[in-house]
Length: 45
Image (cartoon, rainbow, N blue to C red; front, side, top):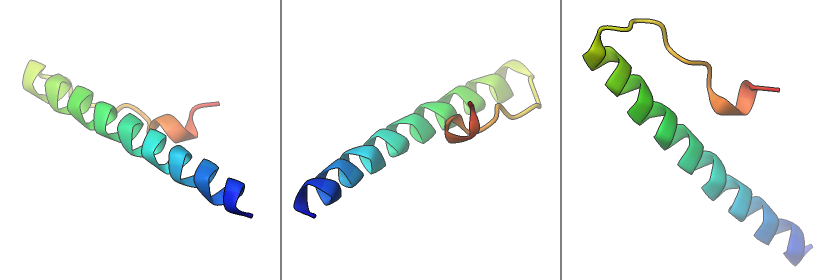
């Protein structure tokens, strides 16, 4: 049980890192004139 929660918190940190990178990339695109948002990384298969 404990191992699962550790893996889950690691995964959550990873997701936060991905979404933060995605947000930065999106802001850079907006500055460069792109309007389309990239899909969230967790929906990519």
